[in-house]
Every structure is written in C-alpha cells, then in structure tokens.
Amino acid sequence: MLATQNDAAIMQELQKRLVNARQRTDELFSLVKPDALYERPIPERHRIIFYIGHLEAFDWNLLGERVFDLKSLHPEFDLLFAFGIDPVGGGLPDDQPSAWPPAKQVYEYVRKLRQVLDESLAAGTSDSTSAEFSLPMLLNVAIEHCLMHAETLAYMLHQLPLDRKIPRATSQSPSAPPLDPRMISIPAGPATMGQRRSDEQFGWDNEFEVLTVEVPAFAVDQYKVTNRQYLDFILAGGYDTPGLWSEDDWEWRSAHNILRPVFWKRAGDQWQYRGMFAEVPLPMNAPVYVSHAEAQAYALWAGKQLPTEAEWHRAAYGSDAGTEGTSPYHYPWGEAKPDSRFGNFDFAAWDPTPVNAFPDGDSAFGVGDLMGNGWEWTSTPFAPLPGFQPFPFYRGYSADFFDGKHFVMKGGSARTAACMLRRSFRNWFQSHYQYAYAGFRCVQR
Image 1 (cartoon, helix red, strand yellow):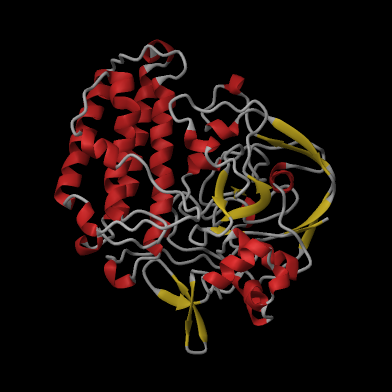
Image 2: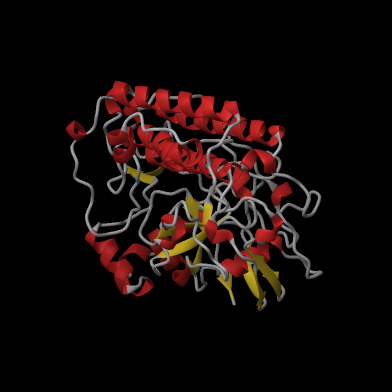
C-alpha cells in the first residue's frame, strides 16, 4: 500500500537513513571493550549487551510480520530484547551477566535480522493492509528510535569506567569570548507547540496536534546555566539546604547522598569533568548537566524559576513582530537548516562546548545555545497535547509516561540527530534522572 503513496526516491532515502542510523549505534558498541559488554554503567538500565540486540529486535517487531508477513527467526530473542527500562523508582534490575546469551549469538541475531529486513525493503513489496500507518511512517519510527538510542547509549557509556572503553579522537572545543551571563527580556506573545497531522510530516504521537498559547512577558537567561554558575550553588551549600528542594527531591538527595552533578568528580581540591574518554578540569563555561530536581533547587536558590515549555518556545522561536520561526536560528531567520554554524549537535562532539561558542545559533531575541549542547529542562510535566492519539503500533511510547513524574525537555544535545531538532519534538525524563545530557536555563516572571 505504501508503494502507491511514496515514490522510489523517498524509500531509497529512508533506507539510506536507516543504514546511517545503524552505523551510529555500531560505532558506540565498538567503543566498549569486549569483556565490558555485560556491564551496567547506569543502575536503572539494562546491561550493554541488551541494547546490541534491542535495536534490531525493535525493528523486527515493528516491521517483520506487520509489514512483510515474515516469520520469526528467533522468537525467544525477539521477546528478550523487546523492551528497555524507564528509570522510574521502585527497584533496580538485578539480573546477572549469566542471564544473557553470548555476545556472538546476539551479533549473529542482529546480522540475520538486518539481512532479512533489508532484502524485504529492497524488494519493494509490502503485505501490510492497515490504513492506520504506512511503511514510510514505520521506517521513520525505526530510524528515530535508533538515533534516540545513539544518544542514550552515549550518555550510558559516559558512565562506563575509562579503562573499559576504546578511546576515539575528539574534536577540539571551539573558542569563545569571555562570558558575561545576563537575562533577556521577552515580550508577551504567542508560542506554538506541536504540529498538524494535515501537514503530513513525521512526528511522534506526543507531537500532535498544534497548541498555541499566549505567553506573558518574562525574562530568560541568555545561556544555559554553566558549570561555573552551578559551582557557586554548591559552594553556597545548595545541596545541604532542605528548603531549596521539594520534600520528594530532598528525600532522594539524602537517600542517595547526592552532593554534585554525576558528570563531576572531585580530585583533591580540584573539580573535574568526566568526559567520554578522559577526565579534564571542569570546563567552567560549558553547560552543567543535572537532574530536574537539581535544576529546580538551583533556580530557587538563584531567585528564579525553570521555564515552562511555552516560555521556552517563545524565547526560541518567537520575535518582536509576533511571528514564529521553524528554527531558532536567525541566519537567515527561520529558514536555515541545522548545521555546524548553529550549535553543538548531530554527533558533532562527545562533550559539551562553551555556551556562547555559536552566536549564529542565537534566536531573534538573542537567546543563545538553544539547539544542542544539552537538553533543557522545563517545569512542564509531560502530558498530551490536545488531539493526542497514541500510535496504534506503539501505544505506550508516550502514554505510559503521562504520570506527572516526567518533565518536558527541549533543545537537544551534542549527540542528538539533526532530524530531531524540529520545533515540535519533545523529550522527557523523570525528575531524579541525572545521566542524560540535560542542562537548564532560568526565567523570571
């Protein structure tokens, strides 16, 4: 059915993008020394070996029988590698390495699934008769799912001890002028979130439909909060002041003895940043990566607040004229596509850069570092937009997390693919998750 709705060029492009996405995750697995594939760098997550099988199991479970009427090659593995873990409290996984199959078997499973799916895609035939979804939609789901894991795997491997990884060359951080943090006044105006189904552009279920709200005037930090600014919070006793934390967040901080960002390390009287391949002196003008709970405590200490999702949109996409762009970049305003002039994203680097290193990426209001270099926490609980409809083939993708415990993140990180920098994309995590490449900026109302 899909073949009648999409020409061969579109399908070829999607297949090319799928191959490229696989290469991203293959590169990450190649960083891990073979004897470390059964380690669990983040307590809430699966062991690394799970993710090697998960990406292809997901594609197979999405496409194999539904689209091509293919019979399973390994039903046990299809189930074993089907689902990841969302880091919500209530017990950590306690499986042992011996519970997982040998890596050789997992890699062979991956090879066979890729071969069969690629042959079916190349043949250009589909046995799907559903009117609820099309093959291009499913391929976009498979591609972006893989690219999402290219980011989550990166921050997972960030927590793997350095001696368990095979180093790669890293690019030199771009130079930036001295930083003088200030706030920018944003006039009242509209903020449009989501996208229209009628536009027939790909988006995940939580990106639909459009919601436009009028945002009152506010002031916003020009840049994300930096490590230097966050160090002031620590030195002022921020982690030892219960009044800066909600009751739930303080209980979490105390129970786990949280005293600093998980990406920081104390070495004698020096602070260091735990980079992907080396520990380096704390880059003071890079964004701090913290949990929502830590960001909220800092904002209260600073006499500010975290922005709402709508305020973030207004600062990023709005203008004095009341119009809105499709991207934050003003070069040219609203028209430029993501590239290296505008920020640290699309796998450009392994670690963050100074927050003021990409002035061409500033919004029409002069707000900087909005795309890449770290997701940005908002104060908005993750919830459906008006007209939300779950994907019929993936009903739990968003709906399982409309629980008031997860918060919307906007922007992107250095390891976020360019295709997910679209205005409507929404990321989310629960309040106590420290491991994502997530920072924040503050507002005053």
